[in-house]
Amino acid sequence: MNYANTQEAVAAEGAVFYLFGATGDLARRKLFPALFSLYKEGKLGEQFAVVGLARRPRTNEQFREDVYESINEFCRYKAKDADMWNRFAQHFVYMPLDIHNVDGFRELDRLSGELDKKFDIKGNRLFYLALAPELFGPVSFNLKGGGLLESPGWHRLVIEKPFGYDLDSARKLNEQLSQVFNEEEIYRIDHYLGKEMVQNIQVLRFANAFFEPLWNNQHIANVQITLSETVGVEERGGYYDNSGALRDMGQNHMLQMLTMIAMEPPSRLHPEGLRDEKVKVLRSLRKYNSSDEVRQNVVRAQYAEGNQGGKPLPAYRQEESVPADSMTETYFAAKVMVDNFRWAGVPFFIRTGKRLPVKTTEVVIEFKNVPENVLFAKRHDLGPNLLVIRVNPMEGIYIKINAKRPGSDNEVQPVAMEFCQSCQVGINTPEAYELLIYDAARGDSTYFTRWDEVAQAWSFVDRIAQAWRENPNDLQFYPAGSWGPERSKRLLADEGFHWWPVNGQEEDNVIWVKGSKS
Image (tube, rainbow, N blue to C red; front, side, top):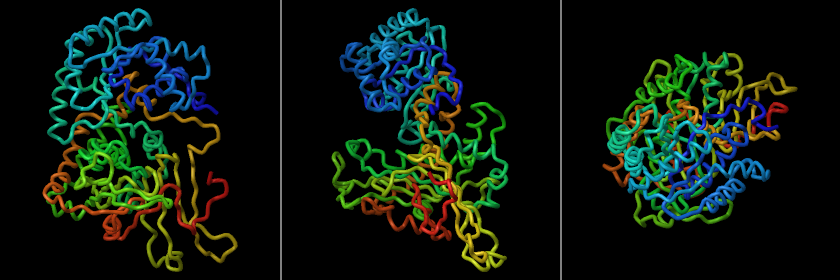
């Protein structure tokens, strides 16, 4: 079955899409495939144009060939239909541009007028900046100076993370953008918010009567969020050494998933309703007030030499473009408390790192156990019930409950049930960038981050970063291919918990309900 056939395809309003950084890796791997998928599914009509922008010279034909190769390598659909490909390709043009030269933007404005007439576009403009954050301001000023914001339609700016390096730099960047665009015109992408199972969290919570009444500190013991990668820094050593796991993953992906789990039901079916509730969660995060509190609640580590599957792996400090004495963390774990009425006392454990055993993104909700010394709990060592939301690479929901072992005299056995969305035969689910580009083209900002979200997240993360600067030697090491330093285990053990297995690595004694395991 084709995912497109499960819902009515509604074409977004026509617009000119400007892809700044069109010769870069993000455009090749994500943006071109996303646009092709939207076109194939009828979510882009014929009233659109895509202008690729970068410094290097390129003809329209060369640019279209780049797009074609990108689609056939990375897209979930392939450009097999020649007629459809030719119709799609005619919407793509390329223009070399020096983003520091406003005259080039004036020429871009003239080209835009021609594309408006050719494709019957009403002056709508979507500017996608796949560029370094320090270029967001100059590009925005030149868009205004070049006349591109004087067209009669709407204007939207889509920008990638990272949004700043800390709260001060993010605030300065936002001040620059605010001189040109209104807040409702700025779409800050966190691609994790475009993932199917992240968006499914609110449906799971608010559309099921047996979950929401239990979604509080009376019934939940702890929440664990894992975002693990098997790769090292690869060719990104120079960038990563100036970022680290905290800024690269913690300030955005990790905290965004935490807000989706912890937020209250939105008061209205409107993008601002959901975003208001996420901001309330971020404001409720317990701040670490000293270096000692950071040391007690946050683990910082870097991968050393190790192996995986018998293959030796280098240490982070041996990677290309990484200083031999680097103190940058490639792993961090933290105990986070949400101090509001619903979650008071429930620890949220988050961890992310490179060179870990498996690639996965999962949320584990561990429910409180039944009372001790009562009925079955008195006779058996009952494990807690688990609800696991699998985001990537597997997509689905896993539930572990206790049940009677068949044929026994009331012997209790853990039983697992699973809905595996990505395992369904023939399903072809949308990629995160497809959903987000489609939303931006329709003016739906639900799954984009608002400025006050960004500011609150940086306010929380900056205290951790400051403590690390004050104690630069407080860095643990873990073998590449392991689950991180021992201190990350103690983080949970001190509270009477442990990290649950992820990515399908369930305990051996769990029985699968027939038909539930794909």
